[in-house]
Length: 186
Figure (cartoon, rainbow, N blue to C red):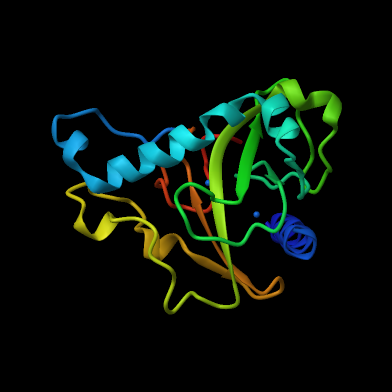
């Protein structure tokens, strides 16, 4: 467990210093089409769908900015990742397909790009925003029963000096769409 925390800390330092959430679990329903949160998650999924192809992400300037983080994968960014719009989450989070088994803290080997699967996107804001995090999603007005709300999903990384939010829009997450880690990928 300590190694995982050290690995996460190292990854986040790398991300913050240089430049850091798929599919939502749950049955489709008629209400989903009218639910603002579902529409917002679908927007994020749609604008990042093209990055399921890692070659497209690389062509658009994305590159690995973190070593392998258990429960997440590798984080890719195309520049400074700070922002809070649906259309530009800043970070793409890729996990492995099982034929590529990096160790915690291991840097991504580009020879294994074809072994990566887009799972999540992430937003970052500078500083400790955990007491008053940004509000990107309309989850408070949603009839959906969320395991983790957006507000609960924002997490401050003190060593790195930023607050982040993952949205697991390309890979289901039994811990919740806004949970920082995903037990379904390790």
